[in-house]
Length: 169
Image (cartoon, rainbow, N blue to C red):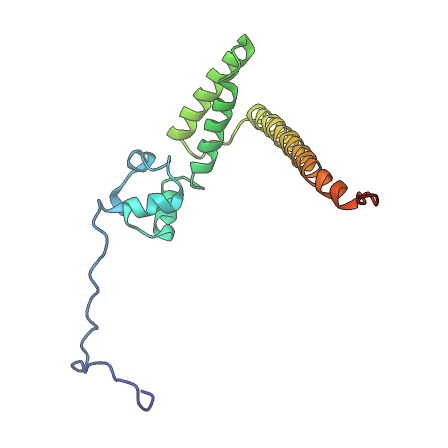
């Protein structure tokens, strides 16, 4: 013990340190099966840990023991966003694609170790490109409007400052 520091309370010789009480009040994660965990796949890992009142490492270890290599929230969310993005189009090809995507999403919820099909990955990438192009075009339009508004607001004031007063008063 450092000089001036408080010493821990004395213990009986050979006695074990006092046990900490468990802070989790939930069904034991070690007994939970994959069906019990599926309920939490729709939440991010941190939120699921808070709901289960366990640490991330413990939850990840349990998932790996059950055959879930990664927490599936992001994959499922990506599928949901893709389905929602296609929902506005009512063509026959889009309806078929949406049915296939819904089936894939349900399969992923049942077995999170399933990888995403190549066709779905290409569709997701194409959707991402479309969304990025729309955002870029919207940003350019907004920038042009802002520049036009700024130029319109500045120009009369500048012209008034530059115009000389008539000398014949």
